[in-house]
Length: 637
Image 1: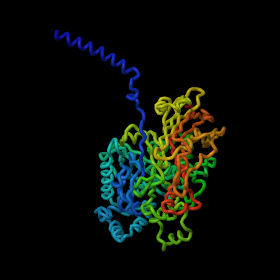
Image 2: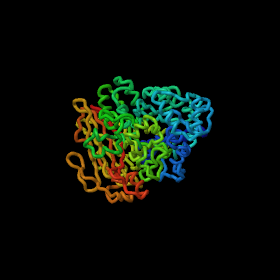
Image 3: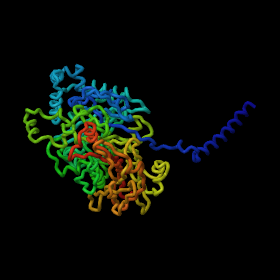
C-alpha cells in the first residue's frame, strides 16, 4: 500500500500537469500576462551641466552642482543664484549630469583646494584667480587651450578623483523603478570651432565605470578614437556604453560629413563602428534645432525652428551654404541610405532624442519656465539682448574684443536666439538604467522641444485604417509591424508600406495641429530625395492631393499677456498612412513629426512678466513639436 499510493499520486499530478500545460498553450484569460513590449514612456534629459562643468562654472554657475541638478530633476525645489525658488511642474524620470570630461570639476575643486590641482603650477595660479574673483579669466585660459589639445593641469590623480565623485553622485540618486541617474559625461571635440561633441552614457554602475576614466578631446578630437575607447571598455570591463552626438547645427558641416575625421572616404569598418556606438542623436536643444534647415527644405514651412546659421561652428567664421547638408538630421538620414547602397552599412541609422544642454544645472525645457543656457543670464531682467555666453567674450581691451565691439553682437550670440528645448522620451517597460539604455540602443525613442506629448509610430505592411481607432493601439502596432527605430519586415509581392501613428497632447500643454511623416529616399540616380506628408490634421481642414494641408491651424496667443487657449486643435490625433510614392526598388526612411498649435515663446513670457511690449522683429510664438525615431525600408524588403 505504501508503495502504490505514491504511484497513484504521481499519476494524478501528471494528469493535472498535462491539463495545466494545455491551458497555458491556449490564449490566456488575462492578455496582459504575455505582453512583452514597451508600455511606458519615460521623460528625461541626457545633457545637463552642473557647476562641475568648467564652462558652466565660468558662466556664473557657482551653486547648482550635481546634487542640486538631480534633486531638481526629481521634482524638489532648489534655490537659484538670484535667490529664487525653482521647481519643475512635473519631475523627470531620468537624468544624465553630463559634465565636460575636460577639466571636470575644475571650479568646485579649486574652491575646495583639491591637492591634485594645487600640486600643479596652473592649478595654484587659477586658485589665486578664483579667490580674486576672476573666474572669467580662468575660463578664457582653459578654453583657449582646448582646440590644440593642451592639458593645462595634466594630473591623472585629479581626473580619477573627480570621476570617482561623479560616479558616487549618480549612485546616490539612482533609484530603480522611481528615478534613473545615469553615469555619463560629455566629450567635447571642437576642431577649429566645429561642434563634434558627444554625450557618453553608461548602462553600468560603479563597479564597471570606476575601472576607467573619461575620454577627453585633449586625448583625441577624432570620434573614431572615442569609439575605440568605448569598444575597449566593453571588451575589457564587460559593460555597455553609447554616445550621443549633439548640436550638429553648429558643426560647420562636419557632424554628418561623408568622409572620416581625416577626410578619407568611408570604409565599411568605419560605418559599422559609427552605427554601433551612436544609436541615437540629440536633434533639438537650447542652442538651436538640428532636425531640418530651411535652406535645404524650402517647401517645409515648419523647418525653421530656432535655426542658428549665422556662423559656422561655435561662433567662429561665417556659415557657408555647403555646410547645411552635413549639419542636419534630415539630410543625414537620407545620405545614410545612400551610403548603405554603396557599402552595405548605414552610418546614420540613428534614433532621435532631445535634451537641454543646460549649463545652469536645471533641466528646464518649458517656455513658461525657461532658465536659460548659463547662470549669468538668469531671469528676470532684460536678458534678451545680452550675450548668452558673455563670460567667454574676449576681453574688451584685446584685439579680438575690440573687433567684437566694432562689428557688434550677432543674433545667434544674444540670449533671445536660445530655444527652450528639449526632452528625451524613451519607450520602455521599467525605469531602470538597464531598460532605458536598452531602449535607446533599440532607438525606441523620440525628441520633443519640451512638451510631454505621447507619441507612437509603427511601420509595416498590414495596417488597416481602423487600426488608428483601436483601444489598445500599441498592441496592434507591435503585432502588425515594427516600432520607431526599427526596420520594415518582409513584404509580400505588391505590398505598400503602411504606418500607424498617434499622438496625445501633453495633459498640461497645448492641443495638436497635425501629424506629418517625413520621407527620405534614394532615387534612380542614387541621389537623396525628400517629401513631407500631412497624414492627419485637426479641425475640418483638408489634406490636398499633394499630401499637404495648406490651411494654418490658427493662433490664439495673446503676446501682451503670454497666454493662449485650447479652443483650436485636437487633444489626440491618429491615422494609418500608406506611402503613395513607394517604389520597392529604392530604399527609404520615414519619421513622424507632431506639431502643436502656436503657444507663447519663452521670450514672450519674459516681456510679459517684465511689463514691457514684445520685441519688434522677433517671434512671439512658437509651435512646439516632437520628432520620432525613423523606420527604415531597405530595397527588396
